[in-house]
Length: 466
Ligand SMILES: Cc1cc2nc3c(=O)[nH]c(=O)nc-3n(C[C@H](O)[C@H](O)[C@H](O)COP(=O)(O)OP(=O)(O)OC[C@H]3O[C@@H](n4cnc5c(N)ncnc54)[C@H](O)[C@@H]3O)c2cc1C
Ligand SMILES: NC(=O)c1ccc[n+]([C@@H]2O[C@H](COP(=O)([O-])OP(=O)(O)OC[C@H]3O[C@@H](n4cnc5c(N)ncnc54)[C@H](OP(=O)(O)O)[C@@H]3O)[C@@H](O)[C@H]2O)c1
Ligand SMILES: *[C@@H]1O[C@H](CO)[C@@H](O)[C@H](O)[C@H]1NC(C)=O
Ligand SMILES: *[C@@H]1O[C@H](CO)[C@@H](O)[C@H](O)[C@H]1NC(C)=O
Ligand SMILES: *[C@@H]1O[C@H](CO)[C@@H](O)[C@H](O)[C@H]1NC(C)=O
Ligand SMILES: *[C@@H]1O[C@H](CO)[C@@H](O)[C@H](O)[C@H]1NC(C)=O
Image (cartoon, rainbow, N blue to C red):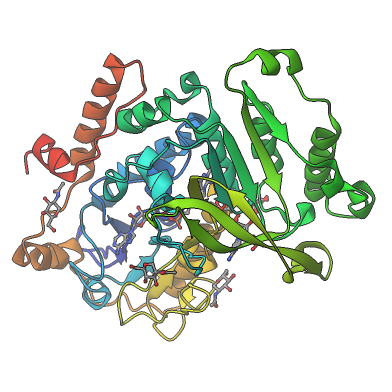
């Protein structure tokens, strides 16, 4: 961000956000509303904007992506500019941005994933949820993943909403998916042989991380049957009597489903390929087992666990017993992970976050953070949005309190643009993105989809005449 001084009008002093994302756009909005001399520039690594709203949110949840309209409104403000295809920390350093702007907010999300750290994790047939999601959502980096869907049983490790997203994508009737999923992944899913999906969590039903709306959607998915073992839920209704309401309702839904007679029973028996999914509890993956020729996964050895402690903070401790689960596909959905992006920025590697106080990066005045890189890789869009309001508030307070020295004008993109030019980097503007957007929508129309994403950055480049 930089702050314009008057007079002369248009001389820039202000702010710059270093990275685009949904949280960022929201921050822009708060800034724009609350400081009418602020100029906000957004730098984004990919040519196209919107982060996980475009590349994370499931294709069969188009309504969630409506938030893009809000971001677009912000980006079109004449006090906001978008510079896509600029990797901060590589193409331009955080130090260079700080020279050019009065304030810099880091909002670059979580680009990596946690790993299980067990033998066999790298066998073929094992994928991170992040890569799999990137693949079906057209993230350029994952466009060539070509996951092998030729087996009948898949195991998803983790009990979060991302795990449920993946289970749903694997088992959904294809008609549910004809939204903005990529053509190539839709074709692969059409040939998929997967008909059983297990979701394994290391803790119990009272510790699942997914939420009720998403679980209910899975339970009601046409053509599929939930398989929950009633024994896993014995006594739980009692145990959650005093739990917070969301946890109570979520548990009650699982109990009810476990005790229900199988739905569509007659139809299931007749159906040639019934699709099943189920939750497995207190199972922590110990080793991914290879086929005899050692080339790919044939199953996972799970350590059975018992819980120490109560409620959400209970810990899973191995009992010493193990169980082997046969599967040809393993998806590790145990959370995303932020990475440090520049040696000049403090980073807490243990927690994978930037140390901060209300978004102020510890020890670096004028530098702020927001979103998943600030709080860790949890929270829905509204959580992230709320959180970015707090960071924006901190910036405004520092502006008012004189912590940010705006007496000297800063050149903003005037300076950064020259640096990028000298390094052969050509940023993508928001109107460039709008050309790509229009092309995607046009391509989608032919196939009856809201858009067909362009997954090859070179193709984007051609479209915008770079
Ligand atoms: C698979 C999945 C599904 C989800 N589904 C939902 C849902 O249905 N509903 C919901 O409310 N929430 C959902 N969420 C959560 C939501 O996506 C997040 O809360 C939110 O997107 C986090 O925002 P962020 O700005 O921190 O990160 P991001 O959205 O990841 O944005 C970070 C941006 O920074 C860019 N970037 C990274 N490194 C650099 C760099 N060095 N230089 C420049 N730019 C960089 C990235 O390309 C990205 O565009 C989902 C999350 C995931 C992972
Ligand atoms: N529809 C939606 O609203 C939607 C969709 C997708 C994502 N999101 C949001 O995005 C955020 C990220 O979702 P997420 O699913 O990636 O993360 P998450 O909610 O944090 O879930 C991660 C899961 O992985 C497990 N796990 C972590 N480390 C493990 C290990 N070493 N071994 C075994 N299991 C391990 C966790 O179990 P423990 O609890 O035991 O650690 C947990 O069940 C969440 O806030 C989610 O709600 C929302
Ligand atoms: C898997 O591969 C990565 C990168 O090649 C490596 O860092 C990691 O140690 C490997 N993990 C295992 C369990 O072999
Ligand atoms: C950064 O701020 C968030 C929210 O304000 C907080 O949850 C987190 O613990 C802080 N991180 C550090 C390392 O200070
Ligand atoms: C977001 O903030 C509003 C207003 O403070 C609050 O009512 C709401 O519960 C918050 N939502 C989340 C998901 O944190
Ligand atoms: C993005 O920049 C790189 C150089 O860093 C360039 O090779 C690529 O073509 C650019 N892409 C677009 C879409 O402009």
